[in-house]
Image (tube, rainbow, N blue to C red; front, top):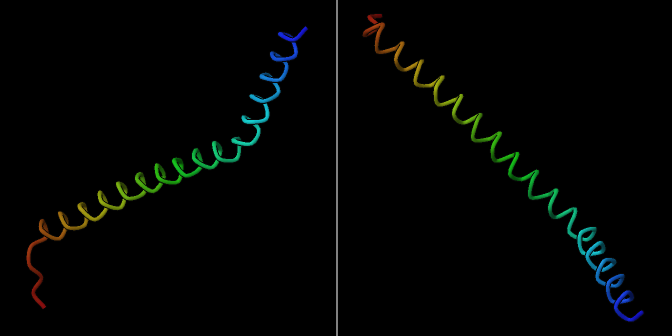
Length: 64
């Protein structure tokens, strides 16, 4: 009987800890997703800037 009570107590404790940590877990996933999105946006912007500079160099000097 005592073993069963201890098992139930452990099971309830684990569930409580998981429930308490759920917002933290979801939060860290959200932070990772934002960082991943930002990294992707930065890469796209860097490629666009490189393409613009390459176009400027290819077009040569502008005479006004």
